[in-house]
Image (tube, rainbow, N blue to C red; front, side, top):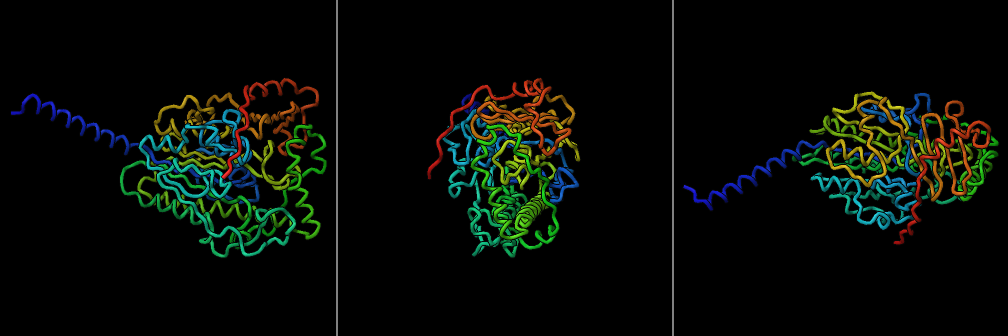
Length: 471
């Protein structure tokens, strides 16, 4: 017969076993998360419009599984502020992370990234590729956000410049057919790691897997088969006097970026067809990136928990290919900010659903927490889109908000894009009649009420610029 002391000991052990058992059951019940980040993928893709020349069949394949947000926007049209904001849940106006060199970890202090929150919740967090900004040879990567992370470092450049335009910027402005084998690319190696992580699950520990696709970021290199299909690609539409109605704030913000377009025109004047080759190479890189995403989806289908896995795919920002006489991102126009955004949440999203509500990527942080049953973060700037995942026509009275550099913001509602610069100057575009944003309505009569309605969503406070990270 057990004594009172022995009975108490046995009871405590039994309770401990039951507690451990319930924790194991709870852990195994948590859904896996596949978190795919694509760099510089713009909206000239077949996912957003079947008539677009750049084909992305794998993105369309993923969209058929869940919800595709047709009006999704980045938080900032630059790699570091966009990724830092999306991964920490804090906008640039809150954190002070406005530029590609901003020390985001210093800015947010001990605040946890979305990956760290999942680590705290018992997830095995793994990743590969470009998740954080890659500036300063990867110095921006946050090692504390992963149990296992793989930097892929194959040769980034061919032995010599391919586009025969040595005066046009840095090696990052190169483009052409390279490498010969897809297996020699960063993205192929990244997706191979992620595919293995999906297929080689050995226990019931929930997994958060981050897959960072580098293309179509410059330099625009991809294997030959991806270039072949774009020999006759058309050029983006442009308007010759497009800058004539821009305010001083726009000219000031974009002053240092004018050389992108001017440099391209100089190259074109010396070698006819260079501009089209540039556009062709971007398209080839986008389709190459899409194909690598397909490899990950194949692995997901073969994985033991694939049907229960939550998938989130997003791009850090858009990309201009000459629209509005601009190349690259770094602007507050539609082309710099509109991105692909797909959520597959088994049991919540219905396959093949399209949501037309405008959202920005500040929604990712709170949405993933809610979908996976993690505690809500009251300090996050964004709002969960779970109501929209359940019903794409649910009430959603918030527009998308974008920031590029301190004091410059854009507000995107279902019909309008409103921009206000740090000097107070403004732009307004009616996407119902002007999807190319060729006519600035800000100074035309009859639009003050529309602008006032959008101004109220601008940040009430502007964090000071955080110092740059110096390695």
